[in-house]
Image (cartoon, rainbow, N blue to C red):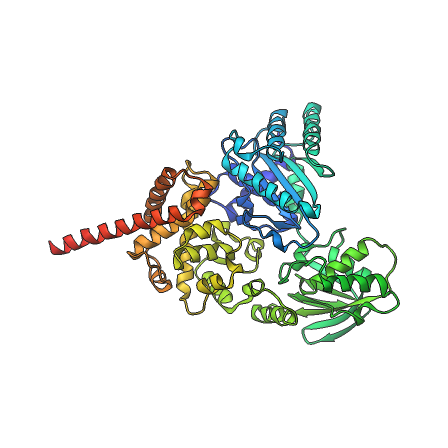
Length: 568
C-alpha cells in the first residue's frame, strides 16, 4: 500500500506536469522534476534543466548530468577566462526511477559509468559503450576541471538516486553499494567532496515544498526614509546575515540582476579586502560606495527593513568581500556598510537604475543587454501573443508558465542568428556566447526590425522543439543538433528565399504549419544522418552549406512547377 508521501508526490508530479509540460510523459517529466530539485539552489531555467537530461540507450544509468562553476551552469562554450581566482566546481549526477523501489543494480551501473566518465586518464572517444550525450557532459566537466587546474579548484560531486517509493525499506546491501560508489569516485580526485543521496517520496516532497526565501529582513543602525526607498547604515555582521537569509552561505540568487560576476583579486577588490582587514577603527562606509538593492516592495518597522524580491544590482564585489571577511570571524562588528534600497515594480525604472548605478565603472556592454529597450519591447510583444520572453531569468518559470511557452534570451538569439544572419551552425556552436559580441548582438537585436520577426522566430523554434520531441528515433542530442537547421529550412521554404530579412520573416506570421515543420525535420534528419550525425557536423559550416544548397534546389523546383502550372 502506498504511503501518504507517495500519494502526495504522485499528485504533485501530475499537477506540475499539467501546469508546465503537459506534452511530456510522466516518466520523462519525473526526470525533469528531479533535475529541477537537484539544481534548485542554482535557479536553472527549464531549458538548462532539460539540457542536462541524458537518459536514453547506453546512458550508463545516468538520467541527469549537470556541471556548475561558481554556481553558474557550465555549457560547452563557457568562457573560462572570466574566472579570475576562486573556482568551485560542482557535478550533480541524477538517476531517477518513477516506479520501482531502490535496488543495487542501478547503483552498480553508476559505479561503472561514473568511474569511467570522470577518470581523466581515459579517452572519452574510447568509451563507446556510453551514448554521445553522456560523453559530451563528461567532456564539459573534464574541460572545466583541467582548464582551471592552475587555480586549484574545489570539487564537489553529488550523486542522487531518486525514486517515487519510500527510503524506509532500503536493503543494507543497497546502502553498502552507495558507499562503494562514493569510495570509487573519491579515489579519482584528491580532496574532492563526494556524496550520495537516496531520494524517496518523502525527501522529494520536502524538496518540492522548499521555496527560496523571497522576503528578506535587513537590520539597520540608522536609516533615511525617502520616496520609494531607504538609505541605511547596516552593521557588517547584520549585512552578512541579510546576504545569507538565515543560512550559512551567501544567496547567489540575490545577484541575478547584477551586471557583473565577482571579479576575483582585482585591484578594487584587494582594496576592499584591505579596508576590511586593517581599518578597524574607522567606519567601513567612509571608504566604500555601498550597495544598491532593488526590491518590488520595502517596508520598515523599528530597526528593520523588510524587502520583497531583493536584487543587489550594484555592490556585488563589496558584498562578496564582506561575505569572505565575515565567514572567518564571529565577533561583533562595529563598522557599517551603506545600503540603498529602492522599491519599484516598474521594469523601465528598474532597468534605468541598473544602468545608472553601474555607469561609474567600465562594464561590458553585453552585461547590460537585458535592460535594452528592444529587449523589453520583445518581452511585451511576445507576452501579448502567448509567449513568455525570459529577459529576467526564471521570472516566468517562477510564475508557473508552461515550459514550452518560455523563450530564453539565448534561444531567441540563436533563432535570430539562424534566420537573420543565415548561420544555424554558429547558433548551434555558440549557445551562450552569441550576445557577448557587440557586432553580432546589434545585427540580430535592433529596434529597426519588426517585432513580429522576433515572434515568428520564437514561435517557430518552440514549435520545432515540440515536434522534435514527438520523434522517438531522436534523442536529446540529436534534437539539439538539428533544431536550428530545421528552423532555417522551414522558414526559407515558406519565404521561397535563402535571404531571410527580418521583414520577410515577419510576413510569415501565421503561415508556418506543423506539417511543414515535420517535413523539414524529416529532410534535415535524413541529411544529418548522411553526414555522420555528430556534434562536430552540426557545429561546422559544411553541413550548413549542404542544407542551403538543398533548400535552394527545392525553392527553384517549386518555382518551376508553379511557373509550368501558370503557363498551362
